[in-house]
Image (cartoon, rainbow, N blue to C red; front, side):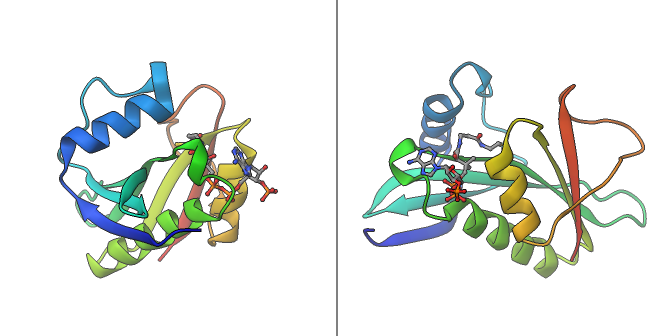
Length: 140
Ligand SMILES: CC(C)(COP(=O)(O)OP(=O)(O)OC[C@H]1O[C@@H](n2cnc3c(N)ncnc32)[C@H](O)[C@@H]1OP(=O)(O)O)[C@@H](O)C(=O)NCCC(=O)NCCS
């Protein structure tokens, strides 16, 4: 594989393009600018992205992993795990104590990657994801 870099990014145009190319009809109409985003580049070309929302409230200090997407050319190389780990580290650095997220139940690749990164299935108090979502949580 060519040289891979992963960095925080506010390059909204590139993030938006990747979102459209990877998630097609499920892409956001606009990339949320309150989310922290990371951009993954392969040989200098953007090939993936992932986001982290700070959802802290009161004494609760938590983050939510939002979206992780790779262009087909970059899949199958364990890069989603890298995107999960980088966001876990960033959340910990921000003083967050837990990260949560959800995936569609058919998305075995994402579910397995979350588990390999230390996430566990849990039942949230209210279901904030899709109808068929599996919910994951990791104490940081
Ligand atoms: C889900 C996704 C992020 C996984 O990322 P990844 O870094 O490629 O994950 P992995 O390298 O661990 O590979 C996971 C599985 O993908 C499959 N895979 C391998 N190469 C692949 C390729 N070139 N194209 C598609 N899938 C491939 C394999 O089944 C692999 O499982 P295995 O390790 O048991 O062989 C990526 O496929 C993707 O961006 N999909 C579209 C968007 C999406 O569903 N995002 C997650 C929800 S927000």
